[in-house]
Image 1 (cartoon, rainbow, N blue to C red):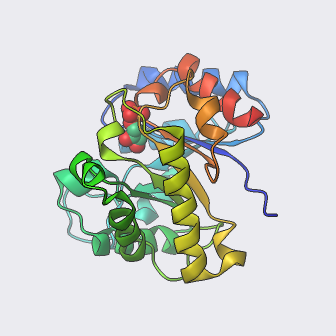
Image 2: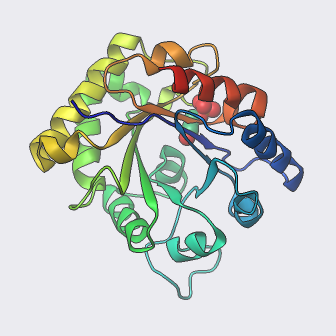
Length: 249
Ligand code: 13P
């Protein structure tokens, strides 16, 4: 059986200040040697300073452009993120897909850009509420996986985050049975495409209203290898509870 090390990833979205770097220092102090990987993805201007703390908390970007450089005002490339000290980047978050009209192909291109720069690509998928209500959640996510994950994905270069859009920032969480169904389905889809040897190394995060209070039960679900956390990643006290739950899972 493949053992996948758990990953607690935080997505600060468009929140935080330089003063909030104290939260990272607090996490580094509280977890000198956590039994799971820890990544925080702050707004891009904070990446260098966060990386300079050099603790166990690794730093990621929240998005990258597909190109390495060029005339793309306001965008950040994977190479620039890596140069600033990032080791990972989120691509295809539902907020990017919705706010910026990103297609599966766009996300696929960005994941390849992440690999080109030596970054871990955290590729996000997830259905909206109407799609789940209509019974289409699995087929929607299956399509997103097929379109968004480039050929060549491995456990070294890729993490998949399943984030049902209706669960993000709402306090709503799918039943544990529904999370298991989706994560088992994703494992089966990747096994068909990449073969079991590769598919079994790729970690699957659940994201959407993960809190210290529900993290342990979510981490115990089949094929859940960690979490991608929004609101509860902003404070060390909250995220620390999630790291501790991942480490004990
Ligand atoms: P919340 O944890 O705030 O629901 O956000 C989840 C998310 O979108 C992480 O990328």
